[in-house]
Image 1 (tube, rainbow, N blue to C red):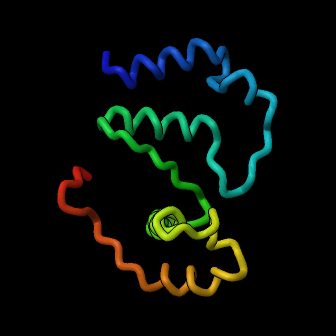
Image 2 (image 1 turned 120 degrees about the vertical axis):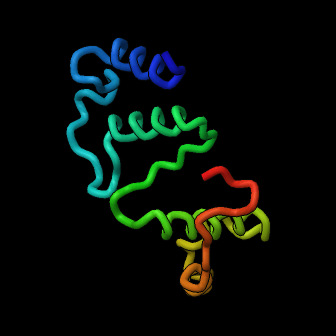
Length: 114
């Protein structure tokens, strides 16, 4: 049995009847755009099964392309020593919106496996 499948079985066994972790079982509500714990776990197992190191879970509020652009901007916070999560700050809102709207991200880069 592949490693990801073994983890999934172990998770289901430890989370008892309904497949959710005990701490999440009583929590019925979540933000509209957020994924459920089960969706996150299934996505993680899928990526592990594909032998991927990073598993960036999408959500329901924006598309994957927008998420990728936001991640690129946020990496710029580190590289250019901006304040963390600068796109939310008034002094960077206009620049971040304009920069991300002009970003052209390809499907993959040299050396990428996806």
